Every structure is written in C-alpha cells, then in structure tokens.
Amino acid sequence: MPHEDLQELAVRAASGSRRDLQELLHEIHVRRLAHGGARRVLADAADVEDAAQETLIAVARGIHTFEGRSRFTSWVHRIAINAALEVLRRKSRAGSPTDEPPEPGGTLRRMSSVAATRIDVENALRRLPDEYREALRLREFDQRPYEEIADLLHLPIGTVRSRISRARRLIGVYLGLAPDMPE
Image (tube, rainbow, N blue to C red):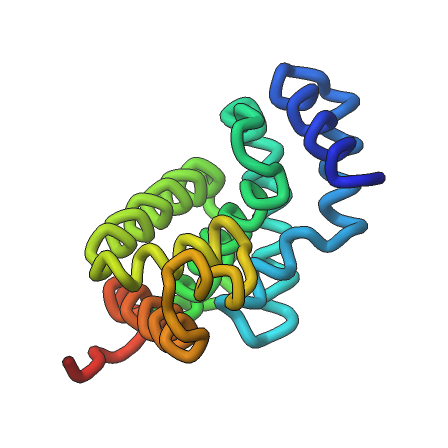
C-alpha cells in the first residue's frame, strides 16, 4: 500500500470507520512504522517492541485527532517517540517494581501518564534554544534528511548534526532522563 493510500486510510479511520482503523493498525504493525521513532529513544529491542505496542494503542485511542494536515507517518512517528519516552521513564524510575500486577484503573493512569509525557516533551521542546529546536523539528517531526536541513538552515551538515545531537541530549536532561550537561 503506497503512502498516499495509507494517508487516505488514516483519514477514513479518523472519521470513525472501525474497519479502516483495524486495517490501519494492521499496516502500522506490518510495516513496523512505530519502530523507527521508538529506536530513536530506546536501545533495547524488547523496549522498542513495548513502545511499538503502546503506539498502536495510542493510535487506536487518538485516531479521531488526526486531521490529515500532516503526513500520517509523521504523526505515528511522534506518537512512537512519546511512547518510547514513556517506556524509558518507567524504566528509569528508581524502586519501581517491574513485575507489578496491573491495578484497577491502570489504563486511566497510563493514559494520563501518556498525556503528562506529551506535555513534558512539549515543554522540553519549548525550552530548547531556537537553533536547536528548529534543527530537531526538521529532523524528528518533518523527517528531513540532514543534507536538506543543512540547505534549509544554510549551515554546514556537521553543524546540523551537532545541533540535533545536542537538542536530543538537552531533551533528555529536561525530562530527567539524562544527567545535566555542562553549558
């Protein structure tokens, strides 16, 4: 299925078609569309799989918010990054048992946690210096190649790579997932 058909499928699913939503979730799973975003944040393959599954759930719950103005694959990529950050955050919490049985109301807590994560990520992005934020936005959200970003920003490619790397590290610091960086 070409990307244009996937986009149309997503728009139909967003308008309420359960059949199209099921097909869309199948395509996300088969094409491993959530894995790229998850791998940007996570190294462990099992964690990437967890984030991919959480991405499917988030897409199913939030498809009604997809308006079709952005590429569907970019939209899924952002959700996958948020899911991966949530997996990372859960793993980094000190003293939280990993084999804890699910509690009643756990789904609601997970949903609020995903919403909190999204807000945390948006706040972290706002804290980035403009030049880092723009380079990161072009790479992560618009999925542009480094060469194109360099052309758009009129910068050497090494500077673009450096800004994106620093932006990623700062996001980790702002989210409490990485130690503070020297200024």
